[in-house]
Length: 304
Image 1 (cartoon, rainbow, N blue to C red):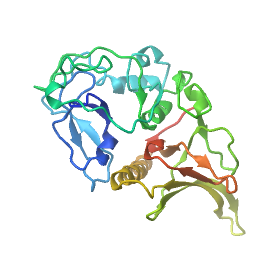
Image 2 (image 1 turned 135 degrees about the horizontal axis):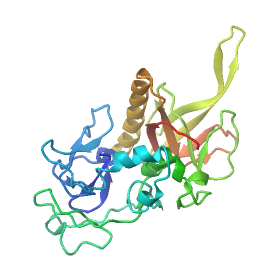
Image 3 (image 1 turned 90 degrees about the vertical axis):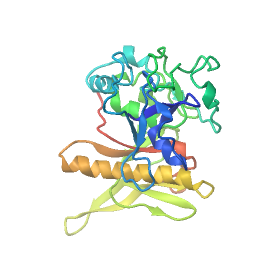
Image 4 (image 1 turned 60 degrees about the horizontal axis):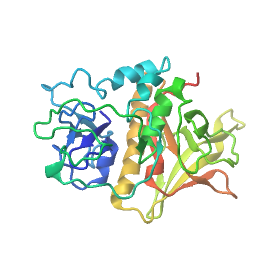
């Protein structure tokens, strides 16, 4: 699973966010759909794969668990609209973006108790197997990753609403913009995306530079070569080591996943999504200043 609920804060946590933590409580998370214990996996800093949550083999999700049904819903969503399901699924099709610096803290001894707000689900943390939580509607998220996953996974439901402050477009279909190969200016702020190249990144203490696709020409020998290309400049001079790690490891994981997918003959590509400011004088450069406003996801994007 890509996400789980923190037993203490009652918040749904993305697995990639575990890279932000110095210490990970391997017993501190439960399924957001039915409450069984979920254990973090591949979250260690030296792992080259994407972090995720897994359950113990002998424990099964409850039969009506929304989280366990995600795989089926995602598969159906590639073929047709599943809006009726997405409207009551809290994480599959986020309603918007809300950047929150401080996460609310709930004392461990009251987690799952009566003091929880109505916006959280009541899940027992004593045995790791709570009763099925109350269904919720779509929710806002604290980073663009899940929004971008939804854009890829549910092409027939891109007419659903999306509220991202500062972004032009009120639905998924109009909020996203793929960078064209020809270098140009983009006056409207969007969630931009482009294929992530397999070559390496350039980094120093001030910034990380991610090369993207761009303009190509054929030389006299008949070979194609890049003449101008887009670049994302992540200005991380004031970031913590953990925030730098999140971005770097996600990019590396996506690149590895894309190479593996290509080796298996799959159509999936690595895509980088971001919200950034385009340089007025050098339109091939975009600047990103917040680690929550960039992500890398492997998938196959269709346009019904």
